[in-house]
Image (cartoon, rainbow, N blue to C red; front, side):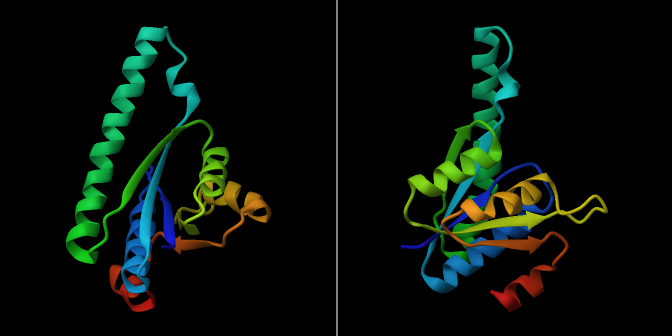
Length: 151
């Protein structure tokens, strides 16, 4: 089964990427993998403190994931899987794509502010020549109705 890979972070545009991936997966018989990457610099503390912070980060990610997962289950009939990795976002995305042969499309949301589409979209665009799959960039301000129309 072809899976859509979406990156879960704290950005507003993440919502549209999630919606797009879930709608496309539902309409094409695919699945959704939600990847969250914890940056390594979050844990540069004493070992015990770093372990506690790492666990708290994982708990926040799981709660955030469950909001999207419930919507995907209830509205799209999709049961997403969660993958949590630690490291630099681009490196971990590329590694996960290479490790999971079922990933068929990477879906990212583009920011809407004047600074550009966001650091992740910018970095992944630069790395796109090394991706073994296509990726879709979903505009962050696209309406839910328009997303439904194009998926």
